[in-house]
Length: 117
Image (cartoon, rainbow, N blue to C red; front, side):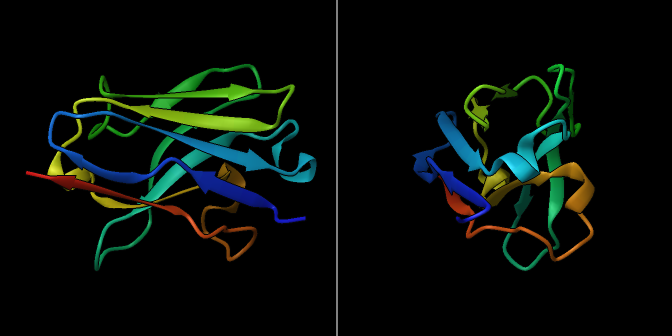
């Protein structure tokens, strides 16, 4: 079973919206803080938002007020609603448990988000 599968990326104009989804295995998802990350072209992977099992959330300053993270504990899925997209949001977006951020563990293929100006 693939640990993490991201979907929902695409090409969108600035100001548009996208909704990303991530399906995780129970081993990764259950009782873990889940997070969305992104890796812009030529840059390192960065944390975008995270959500606890109790649905407390936290966001990077660059996306606060525009992105909303949510999770469905019954389905082991985590989503990222992205509104008012900007060209600087262009990146490959990944989900994972937050604790794996600085590891090579469990990373999926990611989903490409491209925002045109």
